[in-house]
Structures are given as structure tokens and as C-alpha cells.
Image (cartoon, rainbow over all chains, first blue to last red; front, side, top):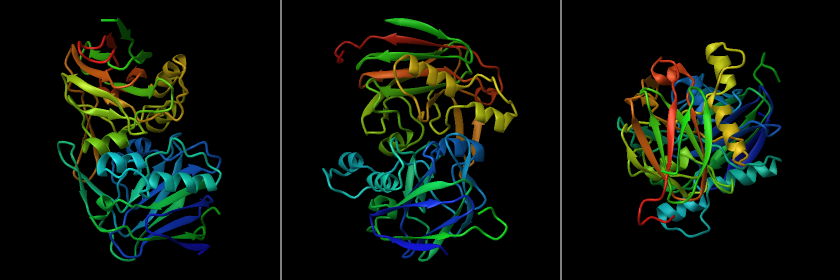
Length: 202
Length: 202
């Protein structure tokens, strides 16, 4: 392991991941969701749910699936997944969302600002922020298209491992919205940066 | 009616729509899908499927639903809809998509380039292009998340009417991919720019 960090409840962090290195995102307490965005190290390519849906032919991604960039380059491969259910439809929560949906005027922690700040610290201009890969967030799509939130299926210690397919800047936020966490208050996430597996490109 | 245009098969067009004005997109022959993107007239806000999914609580939009910007501003309201089924998941087709999915190396008409060129002609920097509202495109989401293409449900002459909730630049492309059109070759679309309804803001 190269590094381990805790992301405080409602907070975010940014990191660089070289091609072949792996990022493990852990839900230490269980039932917590997070947002992850990725940019190419040069800032020119960004994570794209639309391209990923197209190439994978599905909206729920898990072990073996690839997350693609908006320029049709593989960015990350899901190498392991204890949970098996994540969302890739919802935009990051924003101050405007808390105002419109919850009547909170200002000051609420939000993934948009967490991710944007973390990306800026890594030298990436984040705007417009792409739709995050919403780790552990569980949203069903009904036959008529309605979206139904369910609590994250992650249990304490469950993790997801993503392998970088190119040099990347990544930001992760521990979602502060109780809606995304089955009504529970937001809790920390943890990340581990792992070296390339033996035989992989470093 | 302020103006009527035909969008040739596989082509695109750009236009300005003032707050309150309406855009009617017609499928003259039936079974043809199209891509639509919208930017605020100043280029600072762009159409956002993630925000729209969040505020509407569903992925299939039709009459009465609002399409939102990435800064949480209403952009367009669906005022009328003969078809009732559109897609808002897939990114615009790109040259890379034709290479990866169909082995076509270069030169295929594609919505990404059509929309980008039309936006540039209207003074908008399109990159990164947001996920379009894919008019008449019919994609089912299976319970396991798989995406299943079905032919567009539009019959000859069917149309969708969108009312601008702010001053906008809009681009529309007639999708060139047979996959999106039930296997049929691409056909033209038509658009009509309509004035504000009596009583609406002009």
C-alpha cells in the first residue's frame, strides 16, 4: 500500500493515480455512499457516464466493468467490488440542490464543492463537473423510469477497487445527503492507494 | 411561427430561443431519433441529465417535465409530446464510438460533431458537450441495469414542443446511427421556432 487516508464525514479528498495503480475505497461503518470523479492527468479527458453506459450496455457497473472518458478512453476498471451496486445517474449534490430540495439556504457540505476543491488542489479545472460514479449509492429505476432511492448495500468494511487505465487525477467525496445514505447521518469513507499488481504496467 | 427548417439526414442545426419562445421538433417520416443540447445564451449553463433526473425523480421525461441546467436553473419545459418516450442516458455518438463499436475509421456523420459545429456557429464553446436529450430515442432499462434499444415510437408527423425558460442556444442533430433508429437508415427531422404563447413572458 502506498497511502491510506480517511475522508471525514461530508468531506472530500483528491489524489493522483498512475496507470496500473489501484484505488480502494472502503466504507468503514457501512451504509455510506460517496462520489468519485476522474480526469486524465492532463485535464483533457473526464469521466463520462454516457460513454460508459454506451460501451458497457448497462447502467449498473461492477467487477470487470470499465469506466470510460468523454473521449472514449478507458479510465478505470472495477477490479473488485464487495457491494455490487452503485449509481451513475445522479449529479453531485450542490448548494442549489440543498436549497431547492431541502430549503437549506447556504453552508451545507456538498459533493460538488468537495470534488471541485479537491480537483483544483491537484491542478485540474473541474468545471463543468462530470456526473460522479456514486459509490455504494443504490438507486433503482422503475419500469416507468421513476428513480427510487434505497439504502446503500455496503456493510462495515466493504470496499471497491478501481485500477487506473491511464494516469489520472481522482476526487472522492463522502456524500453528506442523508437521502443517499438510507436516512442515516453522513459517515467517513477511507481510501487506500495500492501499487500496480505484479505483471501490470506501473 | 417564426421559422421552419429541415435538418437533413445525419445533419445538425443551431438556433437561439428567447425565454418563452418554443421549439417544435418534428419527425416527418417517423422512426427517426435526434439529439438536442441546450446552453444558456451566455454559455455559462448547460443542459444536465443528472440534475434533471434529480429534480424530476425519473429518467423518462415528457409533457410537463422540466429540463434543468447544471447550475440548477430550469432551461426547457416539455409543453407537448406526441411520442412520450425519449432517452437522456446516452452521450452523443462520436467518431470514436463509430470506430470502437462499428469499426468505421473516419468520416461517419456523428451527433457530437454536428452539435459542436452548430453551437460554435451560435458563439458557444461546446466542450465538453453535455449528454443530449435524445428525442424519440427509445431505450429500456432492464431490472439488472442492462440497456435495451427499441425503435423510436414516433410516427410520421409526431412532434415534441419545448418552451424556453431562459434565453438559450440550442443545437439539434438527426441521429445517423441505425441502432438508434430501429435499424432504419437515418432520415431528416424538422424544427419550427414558435413565438411565446399569449400570456407568457416574451
